[in-house]
Length: 287
Image (cartoon, rainbow, N blue to C red; front, side):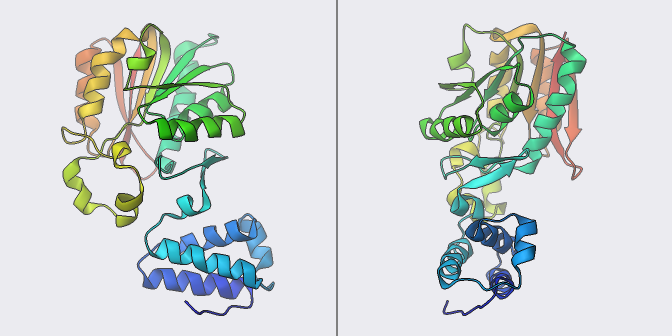
């Protein structure tokens, strides 16, 4: 790519067109250029007619080539925005999604409705990945006692770094699902587990398949295995009054609802859609 661009605007125009030609998301050009210039969107707009240095443009070209080859922009930059905060990410963790922000938002709405003014509530985030859910919940409700688990030691390194950088006191434990939590009791359990069926891989974008960790994407039993295992295990770590919240695949609502109802017959179970109208969350309230 022996391209020459003199201004920030020319660089952005070239990169957006090039990525479209490569069947990549053109908006990644803006994100990567903001990263190179260390500005937000407003700052980028103000710089549009300014010259771009050869060093910055060379670095920008390199990033564009990486993204054109399939590497997600977030892994190139090393971060993603989630619930108003910047989270460090590597290829050891999934890139946090906007849909998961909705799980956080809905949990924050439900906590006072279920628990009132109760203090000292304990929350567990099972399969924390980058720590986005756990850290966000702790930052939004500092009075929560938050514990986060993951099977992956590499993921926990990333999650701990995010908790440190964002000054969130979260306890991190390595282990499979509820195993590291045995002997403790929780009022709130959240999880965004792997939920994609293996036969759905052929429908997925190569950017995701080739770079994001498969252990955090796919699950057996048509993507339902971990929901089943969680439903079987959660009773041992939940207080009598408790809130369970899962992120789900958009076709999994009825199946996950049935799993929760069969293990918690007195619980109030609800399937909720995301902002795109797709079923994305299942909550179970125990009283």
